Amino acid sequence: MHVRSRGWIINPEDLTRRLIDRLAASGINELGIHPGGGKAAPELLLKTLAFHEEKRTRELYDYAGERGVTVEYDAHVLSYLLPRSEFSAHPEWFRMDESGARVNDANMCASNEDALDYVSKRARELALTLKTPSHRYAYWTDDIVGKTCRCPRCREKTAAQQTLTITNAIARGLKSADPQAITGFLAYLDALEVPEGIRPEKGVYLEYAPIGRDSARAINDAQSPENVHQTAKLAALIAYFDAKNARVVEYWADNSRFSNWTRPPKYMSLNAQVMRADVKYYLECGFEDMTSFACFLGEDYEALYGPAPVEEYGEILSGEY
Image (spheres, rainbow, N blue to C red):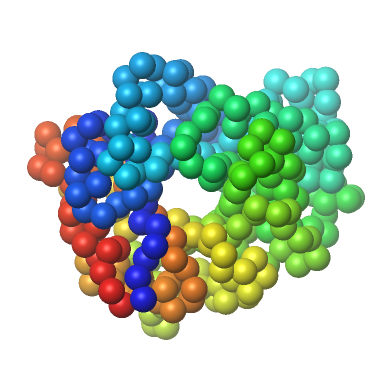
């Protein structure tokens, strides 16, 4: 068994010709551009839109394609697709909290059809702007836990059900811009459950992102409570979505996580033993597409500590299991 699609996800400012060369030489064939997460995600996406239009960026994307590396965007987009500024005109589009008040802090009302249509139209516009050689648009809901809608129509829906409802709306917009578009249901944070009763639109696939894992131990280590929690629902998720196009979005090389999302970055040593065990497990689960956040490993990291472990990472993903 081997990994068919092998990825590396960076922040825009870390994109260089040298990195592309290293990725290509290491067998990495996917490069994800991640604007950043948390509450600042909409502002960071706006900066990335400007970055996308730069002549240097377009040249680097073309160069990546020549080297066999497909570029795409992996982004938390919901607060951009449904701007918080719409709250005054359309409070019903936004989530209701436990007290019964409409609030615009995160996500949206997953039962409001007008809001879902608005998100769908905005997703179409974003896809037409962020054109890349890949037909994958990893457009995710907000990067926050515990902020689902609690209105009477949404209250009985789990975070996973609300996430898939919103992802389906995004997918409809993407399809109108690109008939070959695919996008991921992000099984992440409090949306690790199977979204029972809500079927994914055509082109919606599973993206499994175990951010709460213990990175010092293999993901299937039965002695790790954190990892048991992360994998407990995995078989059911794969069965629900099918393994086709399913992708692991891991944290093996995510120095932003190891640095607590604060620069200057800390030194990071790739845990090769854990990564190999994880890759083997994921292949046995049916995944053929694997990537990892690899943020905070750019030129500022290299100035402090030397080259990031691109080659070691690529060797592990490119191996036979």
